Image 1 (tube, rainbow, N blue to C red):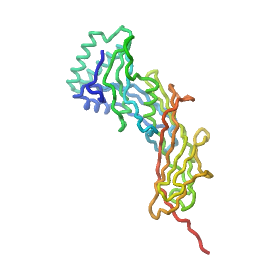
Image 2: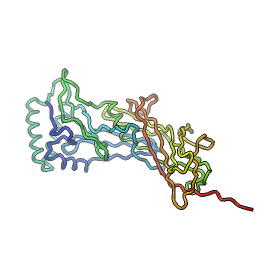
Image 3: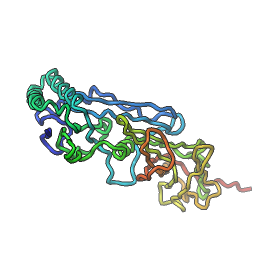
Image 4: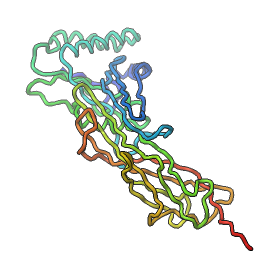
Length: 336
């Protein structure tokens, strides 16, 4: 037996008349993620709530730079990439019965009579087939990643079957949870440090025709996120690879430069002193500022494991950026 949703683009597996209210209730009571820590693993977990089944996905964040660094969600080099918002997770007949019972009770408690009546009908039909207890196969239930739903750019779920039974000769669900799916989910939960580059001369004391050296005096470290559902896991690792710097004005020559990160005692640093390219401002700001922008390219890989392992499969590069205002002055000369 298959349970169909009312609309293919629906974001929750309830009938349309109560969808918005129940999803709002569910999001309001589910736990949220912690973001990036500074080296220790932290996990967050979600579960069923309301009449929507949230995936029991655990995210573990590691790394993220030095204390005081700001972090933002990774920006993918693939402009068309979006994180998975839903997938199918397997349940035994006993687990599926408990899930249907939970939804029925939840709908009744929230006085969503139409939804409660719907799940009452589902219970009656399932009792006729005894939820396939004793049969070879598995129930697959559409599960929602509540963490992905919190993003403003979350896509709509493309599946309209709330659940389905897969017997020995039945086709697999359209997107069963797998390491590949969880790798994409972990990528979507990654946040990267947006630390400003160190400048020499400093940002408030830039000089016309004097090269601007950029560096990270404190090394950046790798960032990783593990997504796990039961025994299925994937770990995504991001390593800083290159730095692109833009002067923020056409009154600079060169107006942009690129550098490669080097290893530094387990971290990664950049120092452009002595490099062939260094931004050089040609005109003073005269009471205003130029917005110097720095963008880090992160090389991203993944492994089908619950911890960081070498030799991962490449994913789309990620970007993080920062901006700071610089003041440029004329070099003062002394006439004797």
